[in-house]
Structure formats: structure tokens, C-alpha cells
Image (tube, rainbow, N blue to C red):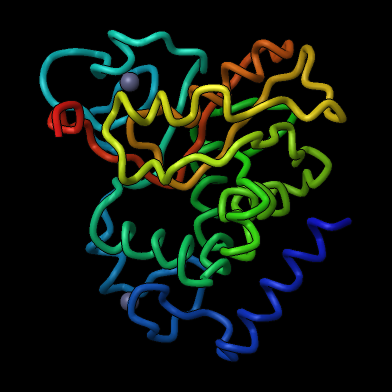
Length: 249
Ligand SMILES: [Zn+2]
Ligand SMILES: [Zn+2]
């Protein structure tokens, strides 16, 4: 019930700010469908559809099938997919969605998540998202990943699938500011299973906005698998192309 109220509030705010129903989320120009971008802006959007890691879906170069993270780290999720490359227009829109009260962008991005889920034939019983601490949620007013997961289930008419399976048990630093090793340490033990949600025997889909090293979806998957989930698939709006300099700077 609470989820519905939050979503309705976000919709109401969006409508009051933007009386024209569809606008390009990059330049604000009127558009006539729900793709979210005008003709000019969509040309500049970079889709994550080049060569990708066979496990985590991140864009990679070279002859290998797997990225460095999936080759050297312990990975708990089964597969992960991302729609866009995290750069340019998409990066800007995601930052606006996260930090500048543009929760309505989640509705646009959820459509693309649905396209990807259908294209990749992703099967799931429940959908969840990386949880936010109560303090962060108070500050930002909503969890953008929760909104993405809810709109995703809405579009597929599977509202009952969206659950808050995970809870955050301690504050963490923002992942964006950390290097690869610190990202893992930062998140370690920060999520717990919500005892009211039974994930045993379930195929779980974890929805998020950005995947960088995969530390977030991996930490979610670790907790979910420990609680009995049979599979965990990640689905993110975007992924940062693998860049090895993350590991050193
Ligand atoms: Zn535009
Ligand atoms: Zn990978």
C-alpha cells in the first residue's frame, strides 16, 4: 500500500511540473510517445549493445568473454544485463533521477528495462532492488531503484512481484566516490534479508540504476542466495564500460 502512495505522489509531482504529457527527458522538447527522448537526443544515447561480458553484461573490449570482475572475483548473481552505457545523456538523466527529484524518469527507464527483460527472456518470481538507509531515503524522498522496480512490475502487470526483500542495516558511503576494492568493503554486510519476505526457492530479479563494478548486485545476490533464492539476475538501466583504471585510482 505504502509503495503505491509513494508512486502516486511522484506521478502527481511530475504532472504538476510537466502538464504536457510526454517530454524529452534530456532537452524538454515535446514528444509524441513514451520513449522518453526526442529524435535528436535518442541519436546521442549510447546503448550497451556492443560486446558484453557473458556473465555481468558490462561492455568489454578485446578477445575475452568475461570482464575482469567476473574472471577474478567471487560472483553470486547468475547473470546481469544493462540497457545503456553509463555516459552522456543517460548519465546526466540518471544523476537527475537520483539526486534532483526527477523520480518520474524512472517510468521512462522502466520501459527500457521491460524491453531488455523480454529480449533476454529473463524469468523471475519476485523483483527487488538494493535498499537505501532510512536516512538517505528521507533526504532524497525516494529510492530510485525501488521506483524503477515498481514501474517495471506495473508495465508487466505483475505488481505482486515487487517486494522489499532486502533491508539496509547500516549507513554506507556513496559507491560513486570509491574505488573497486573500497566498494566491496563499503557494502559488505550492509544488507540483510527482510524476514517478512520469503525468497526460498524463488528466482529473483534485482533492478538498479547503474552497474559499475557489480559490487551492489553481487552483495544483494549473496544475501538472497544465502536465504535460499534459486537464482539471482541483475537488470540495470546502465552499466559503466569496464575500465581497469578504476582499480588503481
Ligand atoms: Zn531531446
Ligand atoms: Zn563481467
